[in-house]
Length: 458
Ligand SMILES: Nc1ncnc2c1ncn2[C@@H]1O[C@H](COP(=O)(O)OP(=O)(O)OP(=O)(O)O)[C@@H](O)[C@H]1O
Ligand SMILES: [Mg+2]
Image (cartoon, rainbow, N blue to C red):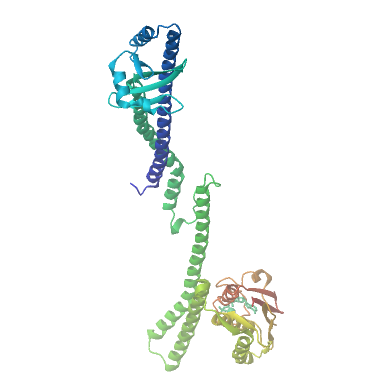
């Protein structure tokens, strides 16, 4: 049960609210009861003062003893006991309880030099004793009053009971209210999780409904939706890639299968077997290239952390690739010119950069008819390097230029010599440039040639 946020929130709320309520009730209880006791003392003192004024009146009229007795006797109707003292001697009292209390508590000693009234509670009798000294015509008098505390204690106990019964009731109500509040505020979360539960690889295009996009949960749902969009895109790209890849691999597989079947159908001459095996070898080579290109793409795409980065000289790498392409250019009667400056130091993945240069060179030579020329030019400064590969080849039709970097895309041109290309070369070029924070551009004119420009930050 504690696993539910709703319950935990309610318990926390109850804990904080309960603690505050207890502190508050304790404060109210103690301050009100203190005030009630103070007022109780004040009312006894008022009675004592009234009695003192009677005493002085009787003293003026010279009938103090009788008057004092009459005054205290009248009090008996009320439930208080009182005693009057003159110069420490008892002159009148309406009960032994008060005189005994005065004697046993020695309350006179509590009266200080400033002769202020003294108060003592007798817990056994549950009564309050007040001793009020005063002076009249240089004679020292004192009035003692002994009041029962049960009415006051009853009122205080009543207040305490109200608090003790009310506190759990209020806490119970607060718990209910807190639970409802938590449920209401967490309801959108329940809705979100129910919706999210139904989203899987087949319906990644669905989105969570956002009722209030600006509150915390709305923002959470927004973030989740954005994540879904990204996942949807990568899933779609992956699916397309898989479909294209299997389509591409199917052609050589069909050729291999057909060739083998025809050869095995009947006995044939050694020459024919040789021819068939040659075809099978070429198709296997083509498949190997596709798989290796796909692997390179996948690895580069997997992210920068998998990309081993090292220091390399771009000019050396370009020269090496040009040398390797030289024989291909010679057999195609193409003039290959390579121009590189000194020491262009670059931080990157050698394999990927090499694949990029090789693919561009390969295309330039392959899509340039005999007698044409291909030029490779590397330039570099402190911040960036630029590799420009131009050819005088067949060019790319304007409506295809935008798509040549797409995976498996090939221009449909009858002049193109079949080389078993898979259409992955330029996607690798693009990914290689981009995974080194660079870019690649192409400018092409049909029948005049193409220029590919790669910019790489150093
Ligand atoms: N220098 C170029 N001149 C003319 N067309 C080009 C040139 N480079 C690329 N293309 C066109 O762009 C298409 C895509 O090129 P890409 O290198 O991606 O694939 P490919 O060369 O067909 O196959 P792969 O390189 O995978 O073996 C090519 O099929 C070609 O039509
Ligand atoms: Mg190519």
